[in-house]
Image 1 (tube, helix red, strand yellow):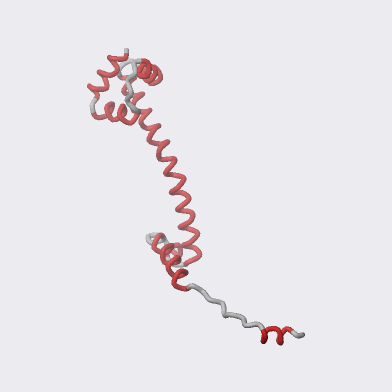
Image 2: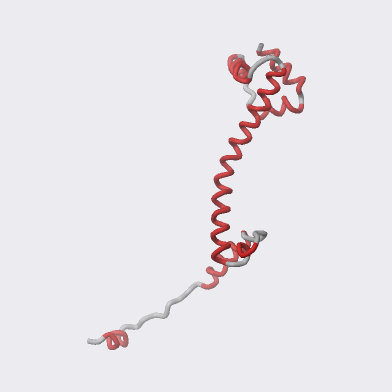
Length: 126
């Protein structure tokens, strides 16, 4: 039997595309690309790549942001502790030894906005 005869006997359904979902998916990406420069904002393939890369950077940098803040707090605590005659590592060690449970965020805030309170904490642990 030839191929044409087989095709006549078999009912082949036409290919269906869900254009509503496809359009919505593209619109979602193009909305995220709003504000990009040049073809990145209005050409589908370029915008899709740019948005995907941007999402990767956003995911990565949400983690890096936490690291950056912790290091900032450590720098501020170290500077304030040295003004009061103690290094950061000794200060943190003595805090733990005296069971003072203040995290680095709170200590850094005290060091910047309330130096008198920070000095009182240093005096207490000395």
